[in-house]
Length: 306
Image (tube, rainbow, N blue to C red):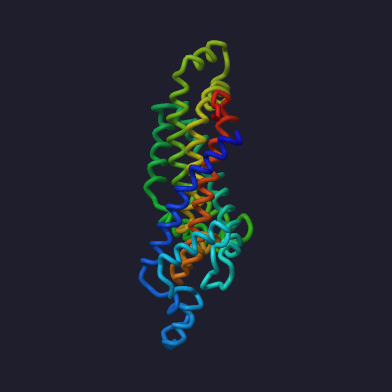
């Protein structure tokens, strides 16, 4: 097990390095000058030169890249231009909010997708199956940047049940979680339906029915349990997608997470902060996929980690 985890982490290092390199290059290609953003249009040339030197932006780009990689290796992601604080400190302050939103969206996704997929598989080619198929298509067709404002208009402006934005109690979490988890619930529903249907046509399911087990027992204890591997795979990928895809949702609902922080870093041309946000999201994605592989062995004893 230890050897497997070590190998997976080693394999993830080149991917992480490539992501860091691409983000570093893109951050310096984006038009705009962070010094002008910080000082404003009325700043004198001498002030700009002094601040650019203080931030290290007057050095050649390859030198900046080498220093950044060396800092990442030591756990130092630099200092934010905007907040004047260590990037790691700023990112970790906002990370719990993103993690909270991603977990809530994953709960919404599972609460909708797993029961709907099982019902669609059990009642294949019936009115219930067709209705679920229609709603999954609807969920896939409506992007979160359209669904979010629509939910705000209905439940916050017209009805007044839920707050419009911000982070507070559970009431603040409901609309962002539904916005983020709706499309993923549609994907999960289709995956659960396909996986369970495949298991329902297996010989062991026919044997279980011949023994007199109820249809619900056959569906839950046998078909669904043996369909867990592809379902866990899509859940692991979806959770990584949730962490990386919170930018739009957090911006719509003013949720103080990494996604909104990355948008603010782009607007301020805060290169170190943007690179830190992307790096933390990339590492989270790698760890989630590693955890998914480990869960395989517990979900299905036939899986062995070599």
